[in-house]
Image 1 (tube, rainbow, N blue to C red):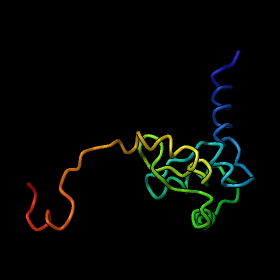
Image 2: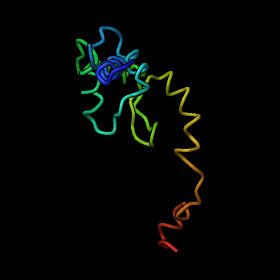
Image 3: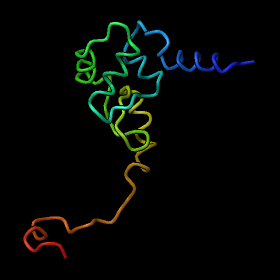
Image 4: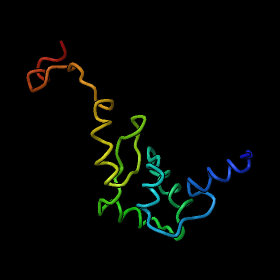
Length: 117
């Protein structure tokens, strides 16, 4: 029988919070299914807690190289995901994230000149 302690340890291990991972940052982000990145600090803290030897510039380099992407994903909030996960999941999420809506104003310079209707 699985005890509460066993379940706790398994959850921490699956989320790379029991022992820091010694491998690739993109692999960790992929295995987690993305990391919350709504605020500037959470992805840094989240990766630092999970990845041995993480340095701030490592994340900057991964974002610059586009191996990791910071984008609107789950729950319509910003997440840090791998480029491959972004390419796979974003088309599926697009209808939910950007449902068709009627425009709230007329586009173009005429609207600016005349003001709202």
